Image (tube, rainbow, N blue to C red; front, side, top):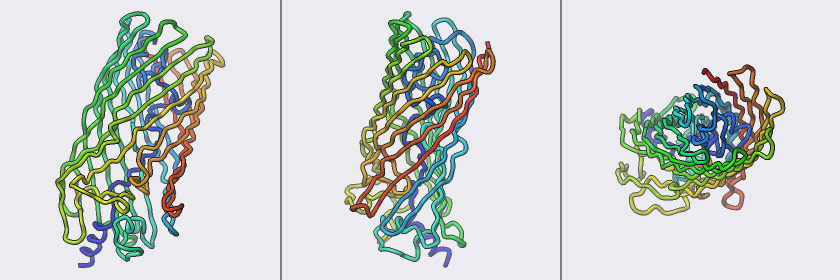
Length: 420
């Protein structure tokens, strides 16, 4: 009986969207981006595979590989009236890599990266996480409020495609992406164990196409369109032995880039990207009700819109996203034959309307500053190292009584090799 009451308490108050989406800048796919947050027009470098695959037609013929990892050190802080909650769980694994074969005018490749998530959240408070209580509209300081929420989430994207130079000044690229989503959450009470466990696995396919115009070797303009990634799968509640079909999405986007080489040892890049389709509301009317308690067994909507905005109809998966604008500028300098240094500045606008924010994992506007270097340790091998500081704009509600903030540092390293 005691266990059943605890379980019902968790069902009433827990959230299933503590996702740890650690990158406000949504397209940190490589060390090269960490050290220079503007890569949309990259040419003459194999890392173009992540941002401007058409640029691969400019690299030398051969077989290329890369493997790397990004380390993220974060602190999320959330103030709710007099209560404050923080999470500083580091992200130690966010791996990426590619295989490229370039011959004459064509290039074929396979690449993978983590476009979002990849992190863990762990919120604990022996007196209960009162934010959850408040959002579910049950009154403050209920004794059944869970005292910890532990979750992790990641996306993995595997891209397969090619590029081809139609002329000396025009190249095109296209391909497909396999998108894999995984999410797991545990909610419970300290010293009493978990009372809610949930997993969500989904997958789907998306694609992209783009072109590059380079009338002279010192200048290039690129454009790429990537379709929306819609992954469908099953959410399973391991305590109630209940499962249902649901989906996750990554937005479609258009990326534009310009690269200028004012000197043979210097290149300057400008990047702009707009992500869309997330501003729509996507709904699922399949829902299970408990008397006087509302919904459960669906991913519990955990945002301030639950409290401040009325719910109408049956649209219970309400993304409330906005157009996201991201841009950057950066420069690379060839210091010696073996050493290249770079730095850059980028920004991204907020993803969500304020009242649709998940308070324990807000999506906030940010400015990023990155720097690093590339060292060629042999004729065929090189290592890239970079560091990036993500500065967020705090989100506030109710005259400052509710505050959402993040602080993130990222460091990355990768090894690149040309085999033939």
